[in-house]
Image (cartoon, rainbow, N blue to C red):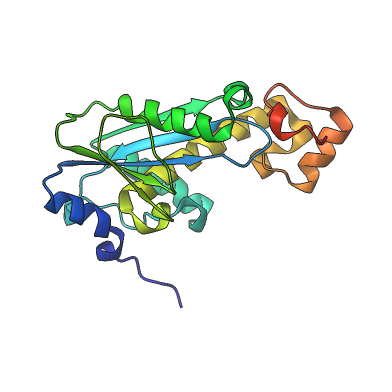
Length: 208
């Protein structure tokens, strides 16, 4: 039986922060920490939280079908008070490691938002402490539990998937359009046959 989308469940963290006097709740998430190729994409989004303005169906991007995700992404971007996305390249990932690259992307995404910061607060997915001036709260499984983080996860996922589809046209031998850079059997076979391409993460592909 399919679970019905429940706004009360998705807005628990947001409503608790609104009750403390915050006005702008920034949801932050990343997509692409695990792949062997391509950037990590970090998104920050501030959504209106009145019931009439909610985008129904927002959830962890991994739980939503591709078609539904693309529709939700457009709705989120259209309704958002503000949103930004930052791509951190494979070269930077290799230089500073994936955790630091993710933190850098999140920090930049937050700082590029055009919102008043006096009453703003950040919700991040996972267990992430960022080098930012704003108050912040980490939420384990936040992309599934928080509406704002879920919205960030969806726009980041759709953006990165589209990037990898474009890269697939330049580097067809790795099937990026299917694996989005993750280490599937077909992708690893492509590396063994053709070697690495410019968007591969060297620190992730030492074994090949």
